Length: 177
Image 1 (cartoon, rainbow, N blue to C red):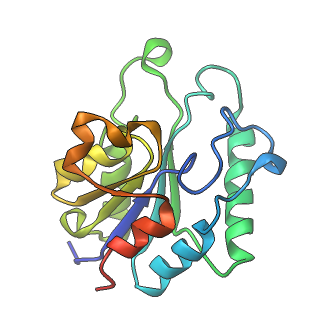
Image 2 (cartoon, helix red, strand yellow):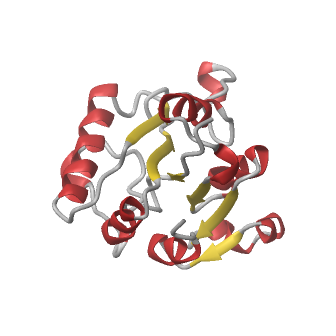
């Protein structure tokens, strides 16, 4: 691989408020400091990728078009503050309805797809999210994970990962080079 570094960010509860099965782009609310944190990652030359589980699609609670509209709204809100996401990857499945898949976090398909597309060195990359499933792939690839806020931050398993209060705090832990 080319050696590019990436920051793989969870969406709900990490970049935006977790509003459950978000269908309406008007409901997208950036978390405080998220745009500035992503802009800082951009300035440090990291490829910034969202990887998110969106089981509401398989559950019939939102459509692919509705998910796409919320994705575009996240991009618009970030752009207004000078930040950008390089790509969005999502898993629309839920195992009990659609069967097993390799893309549902902590599965690794989404990350492998991003690595291929952008020439990312996964061992030099970072995973940031509010749940263990968001950061567990860091161990698979030899990268680093940071749990932010969230109820899982205090579990016994979480001791294997760095912790931060939010995305801005996590970015402070990621070296600029």
